[in-house]
Image (cartoon, rainbow, N blue to C red):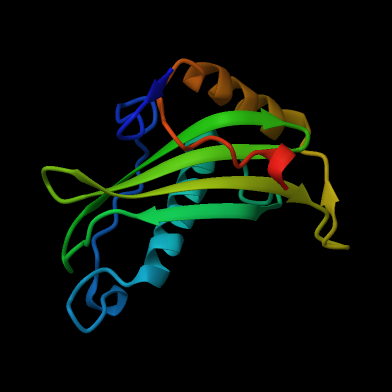
Length: 160
């Protein structure tokens, strides 16, 4: 069921990745630099895989990504990140992530991404399989009833 304004925010999707914006991550205005939003979302995706117990050596790469920057984040702010699995299959993993900032968290950015498995020896795409696929599909089933904001969720495999 879509929510018109924001991604779902709750324990089911909040992960343990909670970095603080350090000076190296800020621009001349002491705001979180745009490049580090992508890094933060990557950190959240890695933490999510770890939270599921999926080994770091399961080779995934981001095939498509869309980030909307909604509010500035000052240096020193603590980040809270969520990861919601929209779908998971042999063709890849479709995630909706949100980045919240501050002690009274406000929504600062949203990322939708489609990750695919690849063969490290060749760099070519391959099927996501085995325990990792099952774990991602289990998470997708748990997240299936959670709200997705209007205008999000269309970056799946069909749009690659």
